[in-house]
Length: 320
Ligand SMILES: [Zn+2]
Image (cartoon, rainbow, N blue to C red; front, top):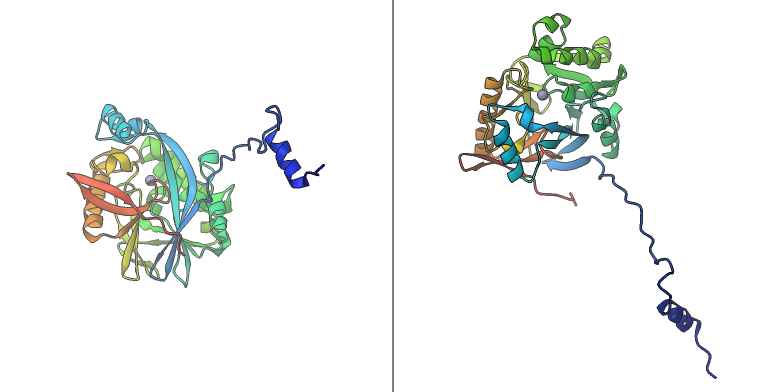
């Protein structure tokens, strides 16, 4: 009688396993988390890291203006979206080789768990919030500046905060509560809280007009969305990138129809003109646009398309 090898035996047992035995691989629990909230690109020898602060779902049919809710619904459906659109909140970290500069700070605690992930994203990207030397704000609005402080404590404890004087004048003066649109009063209250630890430490700097605000980064004033709304431009390695803040909130609607505005615009007519000028300029010059609310990482080009424009996300790079 021949003896069966142990290997043959185990194979035979497996083949003969009755159906009621548990499967070899039990169903794994779903993980349901996203990749860490950063994405890196290089511009010459300057490193730019897009940081996700989170996403917030907003009713674009109710928020967009100079259009109709029905039209917005149709356009969003064409882009496979409902009217409630999950909208990215992006910030950007620039390592110039000499300084670590953060463009915008996300929403802090103001959107609950939907926002306030800036510090986690900075750490995931290999930096620490305390490493940031300067914060350049595109403007003072909760989802751009509330991330400066959480519970009264500076999130970026060693940073100088740099902001256009016109926005500081508008939003950091309690007397303006009586002058701004009723829906904007909360911007003043939130800004006073977010700036408090930096003002106390004497680390807020304002600027006027265009020009270099930190070495290698130029401010481009674009008043409209807020009085001091500012874009920041940087050129390295023969390429230019422009951080455009809130020039566009809803790319699926506003790229094709830049005349469409949003309730968050303080001066909608001026915001529209700035967007039209930006799109024409970006399409003509071909620079990279870094936007706060286009889907993360918010980096792409603006292309002419029909009578309007289209968004072309940057090609993915593993940087290897
Ligand atoms: Zn804004």
